[in-house]
Image (tube, rainbow over all chains, first blue to last red; front, side, top):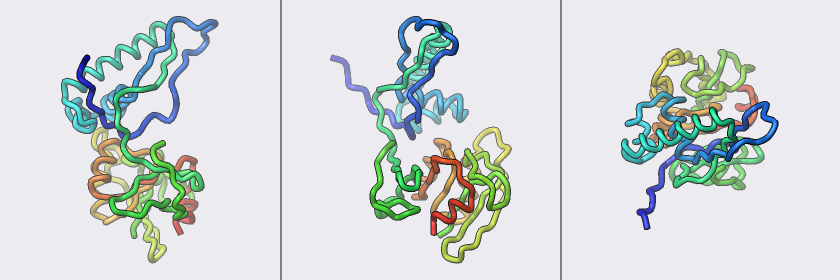
Length: 131
Length: 103
């Protein structure tokens, strides 16, 4: 049995489930699954324009591991683009950083250390953890 | 407590900006005196590190809470380390609507 993968830290999971190609009569091929660590890798590198070393540090993995994740997601995206497959976001070995939600105020927020667990706006203690 | 809100323009009727680092203005609201002031974001045009530069300026202003539509990963890292609360509204809201909610 292989070694268990270390959890990669991601700041936020995507708030939608994936992508669909436009104008296809019937579905071709299999869906491409992009897991959350791969989503975060492409976000850090190509959206926020961090270097791979910086991005690796934020995700708490080594630089070579980050490069592997990044390589894998680029290939998956290319495959989906060329073959017209759907992209699904799911799974992965990830630890998602702590975020809270208040349904009353419709906000997502973090809590400072040692603070009371309540919504910063309406002060209700009914808050939901992590997306 | 001082709250920083990312803003598009320097008035209270404008919407909360979608991105913390790249917004043009910051609204600084003091919850004790109920005074709001606007400062220009000098990092708004930066290609890189806009978020970190803006976060540094905000830390100098001793803010306790930051509100924007999105925070970059580096900014999240900086704010978590400095124990500053981040708030992301899920709907489009104006600065004054946000300020009214805080009271």
